[in-house]
Length: 219
Length: 242
Image (cartoon, rainbow over all chains, first blue to last red; front, side):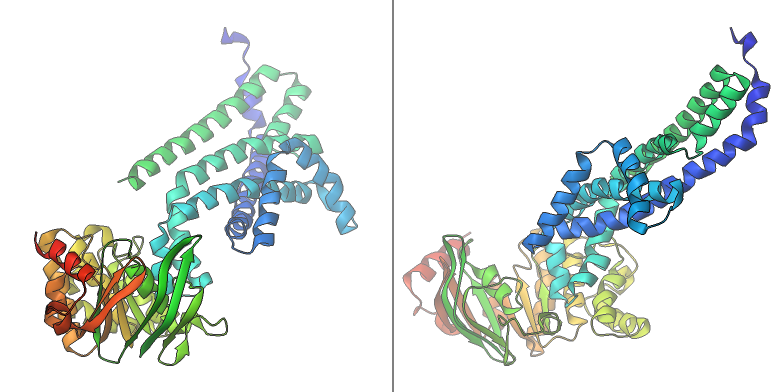
């Protein structure tokens, strides 16, 4: 069955595919970092006693969670240069789109995480004279992160897969580079199979390590 | 040192504190008791502003707790508090639990904070547990660490919110011993507890609460004598008879 499968095509394509994979990794990493920071701030805003602030944060989350990601990517591709006043290139507009989109999901995860920390913990911090910021930084958020680590990582796997959507704005990520070679050499089966295997192995091994982590934390 | 005047608090329609007034002088040990839901914990949490109240005034060393211009975090650092469920921070070691606020609030150096922390751990008999995590200690040990954490701030007063209620019976005494010692050294203390043995031993005064009111506020001798009111009689007979 595999006698027509040309492994040489795949081997020759490795450097080019690696270039694409690097972009995929970079985008995933930056979007996680940005989304996480913004997500934590949004979660704090959502839990704030200042009504307008929590309303704004809730609206933000509901807005982005009601939008298809692909639309957000498209939209920011046209919107960001419009706001900045000059072309910024696909990468930055996509990064902004992913960060803002992921932040909505990270916000909800971190909100649950903060709420999972017993109220008495924050009270103990307050009673010691810690300010709100110190209390969050040293007492509440570290515990919230720890409780939410498995879900945060699962979300990271989803984001890693979602970055393949950047093909719509012509960025050369892993999948797009594979497709370029597939079309050029007319070797669709070989290239797309390779892409599938790589995604599968990366995501599965990441998920497995999450499960190991989970077991460790649940003790 | 602590003065409460006509303090009232509502949760919706529920009157948690009803016109409560009392004074705790410097060096005094005051035990607050009463049936559950009577507002004892809420009362002492008003002292360091953990519970806001709607009416009345609370002052600590002349500083009004309820006023918005008061620097509450600074005030709180002068009042130690020990909770029913210990509330040690589970993600950091025992010594770091004690160091954290010393460094972040009082601005002590790591070395100073560690030295003070070890002194206090020594004092509560847990110096060798300094590097362990709270989850590795027994309840009694955790509560002694919590007391050390409060004392590390060199507070002017200590509040105890049912410090022994979550403990197994055999661990209650190790915590009470530390508290008795503290009382005998002249620490100003407000203690919510059902441990009447502790009250008899070191309290200067006993406050008895019921349904959000301070029903009795008298000297220890008066409280354990026969001058107390009917409700306090009933309460005492319930908790002393088993």
